[in-house]
Picture 1 (cartoon, helix red, strand yellow):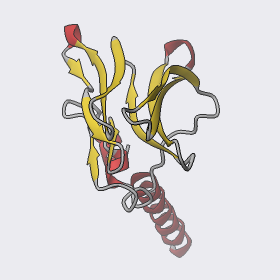
Picture 2 (cartoon, helix red, strand yellow):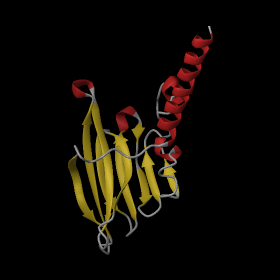
Picture 3 (cartoon, one colour):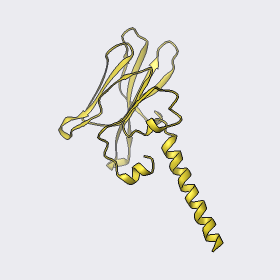
Picture 4 (cartoon, helix red, strand yellow):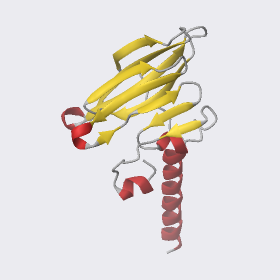
Length: 160
């Protein structure tokens, strides 16, 4: 009987650690298997270059993930600032030397992932996982997520 409680306790602790790790240690996906989709687009004044990549996931029934990476031209430092699933229409343009406007929308399905990001201080991640991440917390001031994200409750509880 005592052995059962020990195993059950270890199982519960492992599950809590797994959920905690998944919920608070988000990093943007690697661009290792990504394909360049748009860019690089140089900002006015040439301080930054923005590139959009897509990553296929899930095989035949899967989807496409867009990731936008910004490079500081003088230092070569790169950082990912946007991650969202593919919608019907995608484009990027610079509003100012620091503000990147991203359009990613499917109007006929009422899905909009459009945002203007200050490339120095802002990030966008559709599910909101990046906003909870302790590993990204110190790198950005503002984090945005989709307002209409339709995710099952059990996945939200698990930290996805």
